[in-house]
Image (cartoon, rainbow, N blue to C red; front, side, top):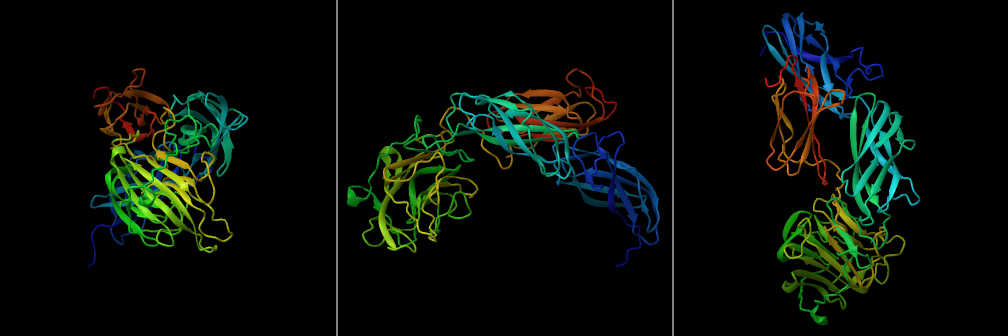
Length: 595
């Protein structure tokens, strides 16, 4: 089919033109990128008529952002008539980029082009060119390099610019995400200029922090550093800080989910276990049931209660002769143990003493289970199982005996509702010592069902500072109950959603606006900032039931705000993970409160 109708107009490229009054634009930015912060930049779009005979008359274009990090402040441009084969320019569209937007991010746009006869829609992407600052380390300026419980110390942060543009005149504010645990006494720091790819530390203008005296040694809490610079950007980064130097008598953990490990050498914790062996092998006076397991085999076992593990509920477990228990149904009887967490192993497991064992040869007794209903627990025991040394003679070696106990979460409570568990060791030898032996000693610990999280007690003969060595008469409890009363912020690789994003209606507005909020479960702070990053209005939002906030278009002094780009952020005010949701707002000129 031959098309002879109106000519085709399409997007062919774009360039940037900066307002001469704006500092940016003189710093070597690529002409095909946008910079975060500031009142906005001009994005010039070139149109071409690819037709061969027909002139496009009265051409207009409307630019729209498809990305929440960019907003088109001035969206309509006229291109006039475009002859066949010709290109046309117009004044640039004014685009503002959220200050928190980082270098390398791709911003999506749609361009609706119309003439007197036809319309066309094109899409394109513009990269962000600017600083991208992240905290990569920190220094506690005292003798042991740790903030000890009850101590006040100077504190500096290492910041790296991962962007492609130098960050000029960088300053920062330090915030605690749990002020009851860690108080920021001096929150201001300066970093100066940070070149692209460079690292700086505020050693000349340090922060100062104080840790509560009641914090358990080895606890981790999160701090947030908010960084700003001459370009108008604002970037925040959360990072964990350990209180007190970990020692073997301290609790191990937490992992990101919140599990801790307490062994029988830990001092002063209510969760510290005592070694109290529960014999269930009938050959040694117990009442357990033997599992039918061959070499490198699994057995599916029904639990007498629902056991919650990393937030997921299980009614069955799979017991492996190689010293671990997988949650739910699994057939992965892995002979080689690995580190935790890793992609290896089943989807969610407890490594009581993960190594290569034989429960079906020589005088090995076997693997047993016992439902101790009177004590709300389910016990699994590897009784006198033979340790396999791989290439080391004797190939099948010494017997080892250990067990894991799962507790009914409805009877033995934790703060998250996850089940507590106890590993005990009657006679074990963690002795893979020959060069070239690929068994890596044993693995002890727990791993999440998605393999992304876990708490490793030992692997390859290595132990963290807070772990005691595995041996006879050792007991280790895994639980989500912390060693003190403070709520620590879990480390986050990426923010998790609280619910539907913050939304402003209508947007753009003419003075009066309604903020529709997520389904909050904690009090929150709603802040409105202008394009320069200054706070112009703040609302404290109580819960429950606060689903809307009305804004009359006035700043905190009662002055009517003019036309421009505004940023709204919503921050839950809680000791748990603090997550900000943001949206771009535009007030039309000539607006009046209540319109």
